Length: 247
Image 1 (cartoon, rainbow, N blue to C red):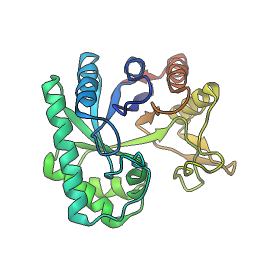
Image 2 (tube, rainbow, N blue to C red):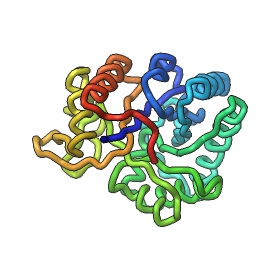
Image 3 (cartoon, rainbow, N blue to C red):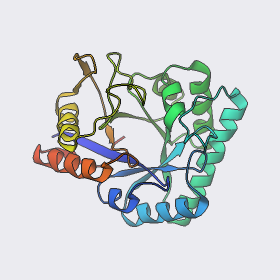
Image 4 (cartoon, rainbow, N blue to C red):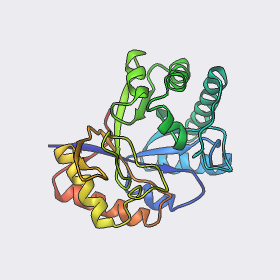
């Protein structure tokens, strides 16, 4: 029987976090660099802890005005410090809520950059490893980040995206380009069931590509996010898939 984790980006002061926390098994909680404030992040950690939801630190470039979606050519040591700082802050808030941070997931432009960028990937991995060698790293299958994390002895979690379009090379279609977002809940649910049960998805050019995912990301900040998540969870259950944290 297939088992899949469902994760969502939370603590960003947009979207319905309370509703999403009833549907997911992992919460990627913002760390204040792209969104969120200490009180909001503390409350999100408490809600996740109460619901038994696994907490992950969603680290980002320091880019609140751009919601972390703009590339920054940051120096190695600066990026290491930024990531360590964010993990540390969320770890303290999670601890106070009676939980812990169990994985790290980059956000936005940083997520896309470390798919290929040698130096920024190395900085993120160095930061995670320096905080806790038991922290898992969540990222795109085949990415530089996950290869570097495994080489450094860190656990990894591969993920796929419920509502994002894919290029033929397995990377995400950039936001703003045609096919970047899937907006129909039924389409989203069908795609996810196929990804989980067959390990494939149709790219924007019509070709079928492989997606080896242990977790599915359900964006909490997109229009209709809760409806998407409800449809995905129901479709997976109907398909006999077990929904639980993995990795």
